Length: 585
Image 1: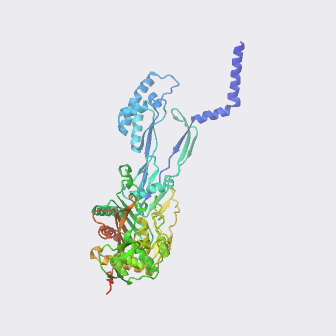
Image 2: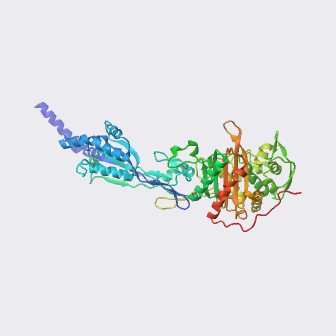
Image 3: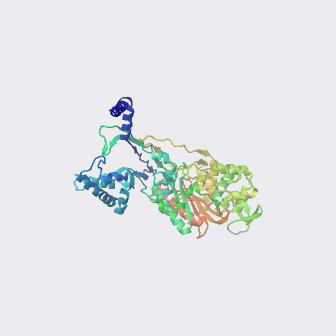
């Protein structure tokens, strides 16, 4: 009796504790065990071109998972003995569910049976990024169940949002747009650089649930997700495709290892096309060589060669040291440092104007002119043209290149005058040449045109900078000299348009051997020469079918300009290119 009384007393005290003293705490604990949380992913923002053409977007898809324990019991409550019917259903469920998964997701039925047999597991991922239509079909077969009429359905397969990132234009602008990794995070290009803004903010749903699903009148709190921002680029996807094809053709003709092409509006700095070769399919980046997944136009640096003469002449003209008619008797070679510099072609004394020095691409002539320019002044001009600093496009991996300091040796100034002894990337050089051919104003290159939040609210983007770098008179003088490069040979002309350009043929510095190994051939072209609007710059690295930029890269720039000028309603030239003197008696 005493033991019985003690047991009853203990039970009573425990009952008072549970129902009186700690009732709220235990109720809260019970409620928490019933409560489930589910993240509501935000939809990743789109990337579109200047005309609204979608370059990257998100399509609905599902992550398919199973509750192995629920599949094996077919949803029966294990706290109670199963009826004979329930036992039959539980025995048939694993094979039936595995067959449904194999039917819609592919693969062997045995693979899914292994997942279903996972012991002590309530959650196993079966497949990711399954199209929404496919998951709908899986759900339909699960509901149809054993009898095909839904009276005895199957349990244990679930879906959660797991969107697919799609790239409708595949390889077009892939080096600019980039791609996302298996987790849906930006892994390259603008997808990487703008990842935080594109991915948005996930939401959350909190609800009460039991073994059989949600409790209808239980807690149900939803915090909606905020979808990612949409970005509009300055790129023209149709022109981009054309440029990529022209670059690929040029690389095949030159047998070049890699290549880049930039098309720019010289009055705004907007990049209309930015091509890399070889490129890759953004929808299948794993199939590409990892070296081709970046954006060489902003990441890789090289010595620009004679295209640099455009910038050197701009500095000289702006300082009043040169006009297009400045005359020099140019010998076949000139002493520099401990060696000798020669032109790419053998010659005796030539009577060349500054216009002729550019047209003939004379290294010796450039050295003679540049020796009148102070080193500090030369360095200041190079900096003002944007060299030695990141272009600031917003693309990841931008390189700065390198320019010499004011205390450079005399021979370095000689080298820099014709494009050796400094390094640039393609976007840097395109923007620099644009600044001295558009009237003398440097415009920071731009790839992002606009952005808006998911509710349509405009997002303010960093404003690109502009600054005057040379006078309008100096700019006009440089364009005149560049036009002489084209008029020197009728094969360099574009029908209907006057153009102004400059070739580059530079020895290529190889960081592996720390020596010069191979060449970089390039050409920059602006049109129309009487009122420049568009610039095209093509760089072909390590060509093996020759090395002259005027032979390898010039045809590519002409092909691109022939497409771009009419596309942007640039009227054909109404005057013939003047035949101005490049030599003197």
